[in-house]
Image (cartoon, rainbow, N blue to C red; front, side, top):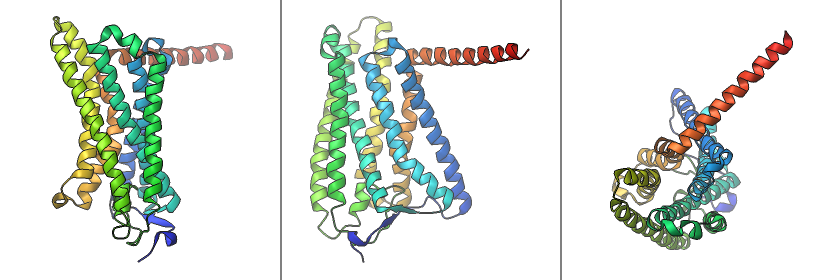
Length: 322
């Protein structure tokens, strides 16, 4: 038995006990991490460099990519280091920082996905008012509200969680620090304050979910009224990536935290946590790039321009030598 004042580090859940499997997990997660950084980095670069993509939809997509990079960078590097060096420990302050940043990026991403649903609703259901309702200042304010709300949520939950006395050891039943696992270590009944705060947060998140569902019901009704098949296809092509990302984000996160205790197990918890904390940020760029011709065209131009610049530089150096 110990209390929080005597805890200087936590022990995270190991992916495997065998050294060979630990190294396999390291290389697997390194590949996923680099793919996530590359995919989101390409989207950020494309939107930043091409002025044709300086629209509200791509502005929000830029913010989504930044949040994805932040969320996956909060969990994977430490997990990879533990697998590589065969360790499980994380410092008390490191665990608190991981809880804060993960909650910050994930909650801000959820609020941003809600804003993106509103963007698609205005673009399809009220196109004549799109420029008025979603001007540059309005977009910045909505994105800032998503980031700010996520930050406020993270401060409240992290401060509340780590102010609880911990009486049940320091072994966290997950590969990264997250609030439900920290609460399992708290003294009896002392966690009820944080549970109450989580319940209020869940109510707000459910409100956002209802808003997204209602928005897409209106969107699909408007799209089905479009007379031309080409127009319907274009409208769907701008909505389906966002809908796919929302579905992946909500389904994995909801199952991770609301699954029945009867089917809960360390291995299942580990797999589900990987899905919502690692797979989602890595897959999001693929979902958007596959369905978005403008992003693919911009990336093709950027890669071609970069290749031509490299070739011209090498040719110039060769000529200068001779």
